Image (cartoon, rainbow, N blue to C red; front, side):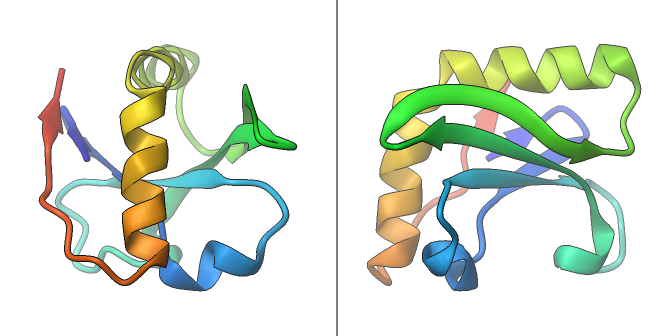
Length: 96
């Protein structure tokens, strides 16, 4: 998903991690991969919604904006994560 100047992403290799999470990549960086990740945000714990920052290089206002968007689009994000882990093609969605 695209959120203003950030990309909210998940990587297929993350399927083995014990909690679902989103990588936040700053748009405009030359590569959209782990090396350009500016934050990692947990979105669940034991199958239940629990949004918290694992680590971040973002400002407090950027974090608040991203956390609000994740909360608002939580169900859709989880569906897209399911699709990625199942190998299904997904479309990029812009959110505001």
